[in-house]
Image (cartoon, rainbow, N blue to C red):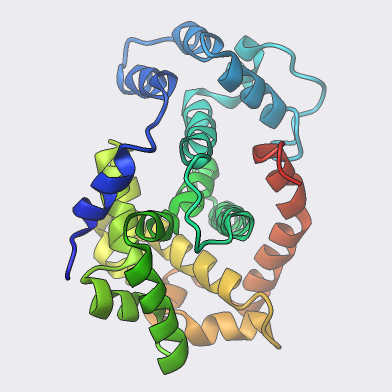
Length: 284
């Protein structure tokens, strides 16, 4: 039976939603008359989010000097967009914490998501993009389609995975054949249904073929790159393998070289365990 990405997302939406405080912050960000004070009040209204924002701001993730003890100072240092991105990443992890499909290794799933997020963020920094934190969130979300698929239709998701392995074809091709849609489309549908900022759905949906992302082609290209850096992490010559596997147009557009990839991978390996501990403090 062929399903649409929207049908799969609808199954999960009953279980996972973003907290009210995120929607408040999003509305403030979209409102040209809102102030840092408004944003500070919104964050401070949720003690859990406040604790997480302060924990992350005081970590290697940002590397600010000196201890930051108040939300007001954090917001002033980070700016409204970065606070939005940080609250969104912790909100996504919180929203899905109750979803644990039987056939998914959840610790590994989130570890890989953090890896992708860091790879996309580091790539964005190398390119000198204005908001690399946004790429962390997009990388964190890039594979969320798989979580939805394994929750909503675990049997077919498993069949697609086994088909990809036995036939040695990309998993998205097997998903298309078995289920009628792939994880990138499902992730894009979730980003749309959650009303995330416009570029999210486009970049996530186009991560397999970044040229389809229109104005968000650079974001999609960074997700494409991050996917391949993760996929090759245990290969013999991983950085060369990335360039061999990437869509050639995307590699050319990002002006990716083996040296660039080596430095991104080194940065991710260096930060990964600290960032996982930061976003998943309760997990070993």
